[in-house]
Amino acid sequence: MKTPLDSAAIVTGGAGAIGTAIAMRLAKSRCFIHLVDKDSLKLDKAVKLLQAEDLGVEGHLCDITKEKDVISLATKINSNQYPLRILVNNAGVSPKLQGGKIPFKELDLEEWNAVIETNLTGAFLCCKHFLTQLISVGDGRIINITSVMAKLGSAGRPESPFGPFSPSGAHYSASKAALSNLTFSIAREFAPDGITCNAVAPGAVFAGLGQSLDQGSTTQQIPIGRLATTHDIAAAVAFLASEDASYITGEILDVNGGWVMD
Image (cartoon, one colour):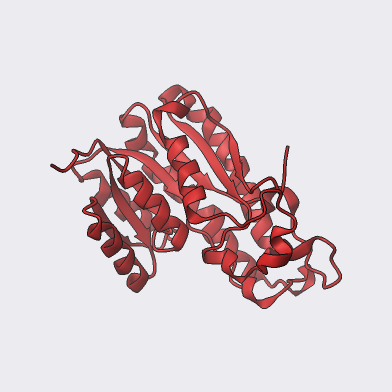
């Protein structure tokens, strides 16, 4: 017999490797999953992966940087039979990550805006327009996916001594640092409404944006000695979404194998 579902979760950037892993983990915790992405082909593939596991899922084609699209999505999800309890702001871009180091002087405004709009503005819009639904359940969870680069910044010069993480660029690091601070603000303001807002900050992940990293030189900096898997990130999200984390809010949970400790 199929386990009855309790509530719903939204995962943005749901068609990517990390997003799909998060969705799969939450779905197995009795959540109906709303997978959100702007890539229709990848979204269809991700939905089919969950359906193959007999998990409740619906795919939504949506550009989260466009407020009218997010408002429309919020209206549609509000009509779903499962109350929305979890929002995972996972969508993220760093368009030039594969191109080597990105000196600050070479960043143009178009590139800057593209990263900020998805990584920060998109999360802001989703938080804003789904908050009413999250508040209505009494114990809503918002989980933002930031990055170790939010703490370190990015050194884009070719002679930089900071290793293989520097290609993310100042725009990526800035967007993730701002998302961390947005996490704190939402946590403080909406705690009286039963909302917890936390973040997971991955280090190097062998999936999505992290596939371009040189594993040899990267793992030398990580005490555990390997890159993260998508399972590692999904497990951290699932914990923050669970009842076991009901007294945790405004926290950035580092998942980086000990590469950065504080």
